[in-house]
Image (cartoon, rainbow, N blue to C red):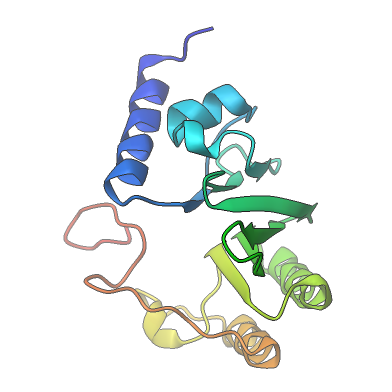
Length: 189
């Protein structure tokens, strides 16, 4: 079955980005995919990712996360999912070193966010010492990350506390403030 034009075009853009950046590990957010299989991975990322991916989808239509790695360099193993995360161990074929990666798609509602933060804390014991936690948390830990003055300090403080407890270090963006944009004068509208 051939994909609709818009879906094929989005997959082609993703594949070109992977190729242009020579990516060997990829985490895609908000995939909107009902099904992820070898064919979708080959079309979206390239044949080198086929057989070395993990995906999960939530009930929300936009939700979905894919973690994939190039079989030329890595082995993806020990895949675990929770309500809002997918985790795996990545083993380097060259030296057998291993580390953990977790892709996140956080909930929208405040009550669910509290449960989500507990979910992240519970991941820690099963992750390796080298652990990358990435994705869309739908949370902030400092008021300057918000584009308006409406800040839920209780959620912000709890998220900051978990970041500190797990000893997570933020990797900062270079060249822009947000990881996404509406490409308008006010990029978060």
